[in-house]
Length: 425
Ligand code: PMP
Image (cartoon, rainbow, N blue to C red; front, side):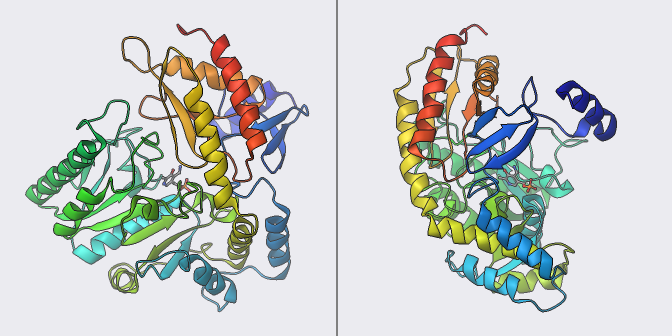
């Protein structure tokens, strides 16, 4: 079927609520490793998808899903080893007594639970996030999102603090930025207390991924952690983007930043594309949550999801994918840093999540320029996208088996594209 026919059918059947990438949408039919193919047989290098973490259609994961689906699939109200084996495997990678887990299907559900855990532990509702983040699509998590402010404005119990921004830093040096960030959190806590909501917790992504992966460093959050702890709030760490080794230097973003969260949420890459996510917390938090809310998730933790998640972990470890992310990520970033371009404001990255921010001569974001670059890269057979407050930062976040040769291919095409796209786009 022609792309135009598919688009019309999609619009008729799905309405406007399923946004699509690219001016010329891509109709994908097959994937393998870091490669994707469209219906015309055109091959693309995938520099965007972090969900197929160990590579598209990895045979070990496919086989694990198939085997379990052919044997049994039920819910967690029956006994099954799958969820127990996986919990032992996952929690072995975490410290800080993060030893119990609730499995769900999406990162949004996981974060929704994390918010309720903070409420249960403190008896308060006030929650803080950054002003340029995304933590999910449930009612509670979408109230933290700045992409589309909630109808009726932000609720009284939500406060958003300015996200770290390495191109327009608030506070000067990195140390000053770290201090300024903590001061804003302190101010938000005081406002929540004055509102009568009190302060339950701070939800954050340790790599500030949706904020545009600003160039921060370990220790950045130390003053903030002190402020949150002093006020009796919980640190709710959203590892949906940085987790499972993507940042290379550590398996988890909070271990890289150097702080101990009370609750960790994981999702997207957890089962290589099969919908699985989880909330991991200390036993005391789990117990208090149980008393306050009670929770059951029909699909969360089913044996097929657990088999997929387990197989994903097998491949991460067997293929040394965290180390690969460290080495190839550093290489790609070095190449990005070497690029000279009049609109380039900053090249930055952390493991296999990297990009370039573009700014016009007058200091305003080069959003259209970045959009054009993304379109041209797609034409050239490399899929990537944009990120950041003004969507003027290229976002490259490939599957983890991304090698040096793939980085070279993407960077060569990017250099060529940057020479071709007019700066006044
Ligand atoms: N947290 C972060 C940091 C995310 O980037 C996302 C999804 N982009 C979510 C949570 C929500 O995950 P899901 O789409 O699985 O609900």
